[in-house]
Image 1 (tube, rainbow, N blue to C red):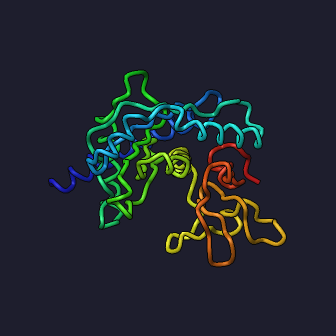
Image 2 (image 1 turned 60 degrees about the vertical axis):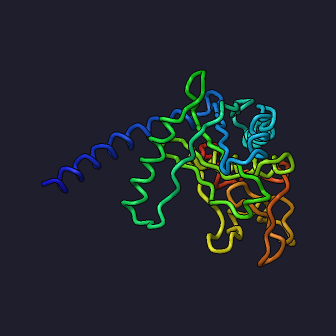
Image 3 (image 1 turned 30 degrees about the vertical axis):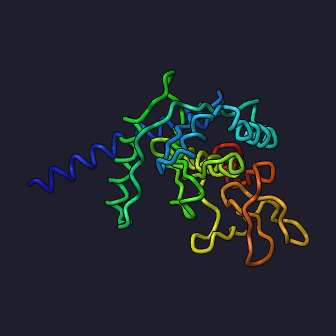
Length: 257
């Protein structure tokens, strides 16, 4: 009896969430108005170096994300000059729940709901609620050589980015923020999960180049530039990144063929 009730409650929640997600997606990808993205900084390792970096963060640190989206929207002839506005919200003092090690459908489902509830209870924004919430967990690179995988959820329009604290990492961090933002509005990954190598042709910025290698730009949802058939490197900034045709279709910038 209890198991049946639990399943009924879960299905009810999922139906409500699915309906809400559909309506929200239609609103966020009609591109009639700019999307408001709030960046919520988090001190991921409690270090003073990380804290000092968070305290000096301003909206200007994320302007290249706005510029990147504006330039790509112009390329796809989207009738809006500024598709997104990025704002830095006050620091969040809690860390988001990590994905479960057991990646069963039910475990991932419960974790997704848990993360979205966590985001709901950790909204430090003092103004209107943003369209997209990106929680950036900063870490001191001196003590954290490897960071957890960043993620973006279309359901709930929530992203979690694990990044390094420090001005020299700002531009690369912004590539990851832009990548996860696009996940929240429907874009899919375009790289091999085992190796991180871009999928051909959708993960290549210039799949028709002759010769094909080296690629001098990266497709945003692939995240790397293919140098040859087995090596791909992370771009230095969003100025070396593009939104490919399939990604443009996924975010409603380009009609499907």
